[in-house]
Length: 231
Image (cartoon, rainbow, N blue to C red; front, side):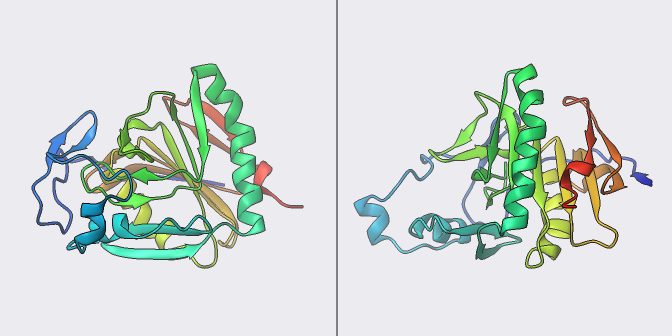
């Protein structure tokens, strides 16, 4: 079963602000460019100055390696790291897309920090793929518009974020392709989003888990979604 929808894309300027009073210079190729260097760790000045924006509050937080900390729609969301089923499906993404990445001289990253270009909202996709020299924001975040594909595995505590909030965020951040593996749906589904604009992805293709799903350029690969079936 394949369900495909298409909308006519409207030309739109990239988002230059996201609930933040600071001025941000935008580079269409590399994302946010500021007069100040992106945060790269604790400094005496950083320790003294209290945060005044959501992004500054995120940068002010200590590292929490056992938790996933993201900014979604202006809110700081703290959630547990992947459960066993999610982790297994992320491993399947690495296994399936690893050879594809090798063929293109790309890299794959499970649960790496990503900065949404132009809005500077940090998120942690369950899986990312992109060139070895993908641009970064600061020391630890890859820029969304420098990647090739990102993927989210829906869990019971992230249904709204993965199905509704993140596709719009990733589209506005210029991520070319977003894959959403949804074992919480009935029936279970896998969806590929493509053609990002400020209004969201203009093309979506959904198949029932177990069917074949074509992944568009620049990946150009047919994904056998039966790899996500647990039985």
